[in-house]
Image (tube, rainbow, N blue to C red; front, side, top):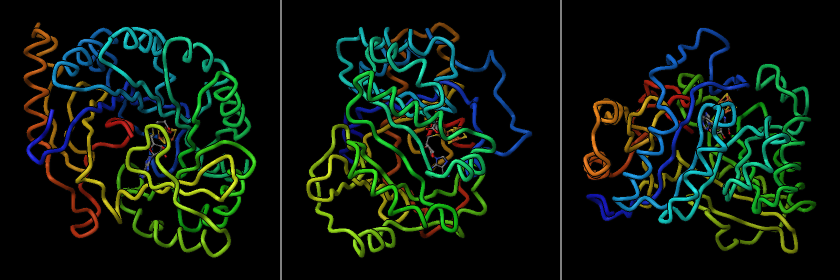
Length: 326
Ligand code: SAM
Ligand code: SF4
């Protein structure tokens, strides 16, 4: 269905948990995270009910995220159930990849179409540093497992962070020459643990593009499946591509087709706006799927035209990314 600004809202991103098996410094605090109480998190059947209701207002694409979606018990079963909904034509997942070695094949069989794996550095030491103890080898095994299970494309999400991985940009690009990976550089957002410090570490897409084009000849690439807001390039002849996602410098609000569901059952029309619409209370008071779909319709109608992070300060978010779903 179209919102008030003629955008066709057909994509629902669902945070299935705010828990995570890593602690990326820009995303989560080291400790003292207030995890949502178990009973406050939507049960799998409740998530399924929301998806069925969302389908009634035109949602066709689902992405599971978190927190780390693969630590949510029953995620593979949930995907299998969502795959049976005929109107849903795309199911995707954003993961840190740690659990993919044991789960990739089952996820593929269940009907998952696409995976995005987050990876901010190619150095094992720096990986341990940014994730506070994670093992890079595990993520690489996850990337391999995803490819072996038949996921194509496999996209890698890399948050560009000044002073941390800006010296590795060329190495990431080099990967696209060797493997059919789609490396996407994402601008750091003032959200989650990096809310107050992001500005100092932020690198714009324009700066990255300049760096990349000074060394490589890259040509614009037509969309990679499910491309969304990324702009893609390729080194001629390379099996992989290079993408840029610019939520800050070139916000894609005018093309934004998404709605978010938090782990606690709140609908978020915009990632950057704290406004939420409660779905859990009606869900738990026995609302019908039609009634729920009417609430989702209201949420779509209330989607703001745009965020103005670049102009109006960098501190609009009260929830952390793991609660909203990145
Ligand atoms: N745990 C999964 C993962 O890491 O892929 C899914 C959830 S995570 C919140 C989703 C994505 O959001 C990751 O690619 C992560 O790097 C990105 N992210 C988290 N905090 C961010 C921030 N402040 N700015 C930009 N991207 C961020
Ligand atoms: Fe966990 Fe993903 Fe956040 Fe890293 S970015 S702490 S892997 S939720």
